[in-house]
Image 1 (cartoon, rainbow, N blue to C red):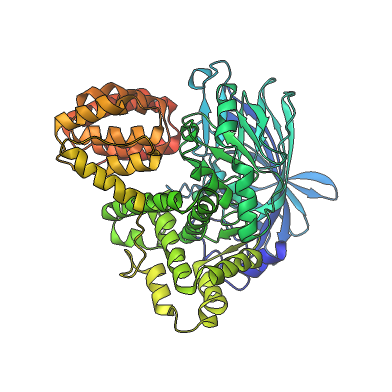
Image 2: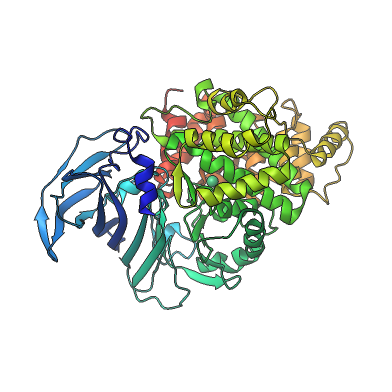
Amino acid sequence: MLSSIVALVAGQPAQAEDVHSYARLNQVSTPHLELNLTVDFEARQLKGHATYTLARHDKTTQLYLDTSDLTIERAELLIDDQWQPTKFTLGDVHPSLGRELIVDIGSVAKQVRIHYQTAPTASGLQWLTPEQTAGKKHPFMFSQSQPIHSRSWIPIQDSPALRLTYNATITTPKGLLAVMSADNSLSDERPGTYEFAMPQPIPPYLIAIAAGDLAVKSISENVAVFAEQYILEDAAWEFADTPAMIETTEAMYGPYRWDRYDLLILPPSFPFGGMENPRLSFITPTVVSGDRSLVNLIAHELAHSWSGNLVTNASWRDLWINEGFTSYVENRIMEALFGERRANMELALGYQDLLDDMERLKPQDTVLNIDLGTRHPDDVFSQVPYVKGQLFLVYLEQKFGRDMFDKFLRQYFEDFAFQSISTEQFKKYLKRQLLDKQPDTVTMSKINEWLHEPGLPEDAPKPTSDAFTQVEQQMQRWLKGGQLQTDKWTTHEWLHFINNLPLDISANNMARLDREFNLTNIQNSEIAHAWLKLAIVKKYEPARERLRSYLLTIGRNKLVSPLYRELAKTSDNLKWAREVYQQAKPGYHPLTQTVNEALLYGDN
Ligand SMILES: [Zn+2]
């Protein structure tokens, strides 16, 4: 697999493609990592060493690594089977990129070892006290490395253009379990030392770790759930369709290439819905809703086993290559397993979120192949790479027909397996493998409009859902005093209903809705979110205490930040929101803190 790395960067100026990494992959790259780390909960630190196998592509005698907030103790080279000290220097601190670490590697060493420790403030790690977990007895820690946070817990060539395999030895306090994006053991034993291997080459942002009081339950021969005991059975029930999702995706897009597929249910502070760490997707507990209505998140993380993990964006400018393809594949999985009606509703909900985001974003930030400069790539995570990217592929599917487009996609996953690709490479491939095969169907200037222009093209698909049309008809009758027939409604219909209520809805009607359907106390995290957001806009005070407890118990950024954004619009609410935020902050992930502090304390 190394040859593909070299091929990708050969002949290009040093790292012109990835402005978010100091690594110079065309000089020397690091195809294999051995990690040896101790998890120190008291100090909130990982301590140990990282050993790299070196692949030299020219005569350079220096290795450039990315670091952020790391203390580097010493560096060594393996020469004639002996570890010998070597010199290293750290560059200046860059506000979003961290510091480059330059290690002298001479001209003969085949391996280099860095001894280091992380900071308690590492942006890619969250440390939870026992009180912040459900079990209350043991601490918990987990990583979130995408996009450029690996460097806050491993000195590494932190570019998605690199692929590396890894092994790890992780030591935890006895009784706790460590898991990684690797071959996790299903054993009940908790000896405190764990060995891992990830034999498939992955980009650095997919290296992941978690440790805590975890139990495990198998769903099938190849799928298991890791979770704190309180939610283990519920999660195994909620995600029982995962093996069927794998089979469905394999039938459409080729083999699943990662052996096992396990799920790790994190504490509520996990900042994302899910993270597609290979072999072990990290999942928010907020989708364990008791009715399997939010499992498209699992379809999404699983889909990344093809788009993202197998075929990877070469830089964070190309994030749509990960997320647009994955959102498309996710919806195809949902359609194949649960039917067109549900898939259409989910696509229509995503479309509405995209339109909302595009209204808020600067035009240049609605471009798929976004020009980030050296802005932190955390900034690209809007609905644009996800849903606009998805609509681009839906557009191609509609133009070329599903049969032809499916064949194209299947071949794409095969041709770029275990490689990283840029938007420009994709365009060339698309032209050769699809556009030229059926000329006069889609022009290259149309492709360029999709990839390089802001907003949506005039003829972009506009997803609709018959189910939602019926919801809207019911809404009109209800607003005039009629009854709602909701017994067959799923989460999707409720979301569409609440999100589309007229903003001049009367206080009486808000109270009536709450009385009939108990929306303030509903446990479904997505419906509660939609209702609480409306309650803020409408100053519906009976929901105030529920809003407080929601913000205090959930740290998934997609669910909390729109609420803080809405609260920040009036001075009374802002004052209240700041108080709640200060109370909630210790339970929020560093990323959730950054985003919401900008909303509550920034000058916007
Ligand atoms: Zn994704």
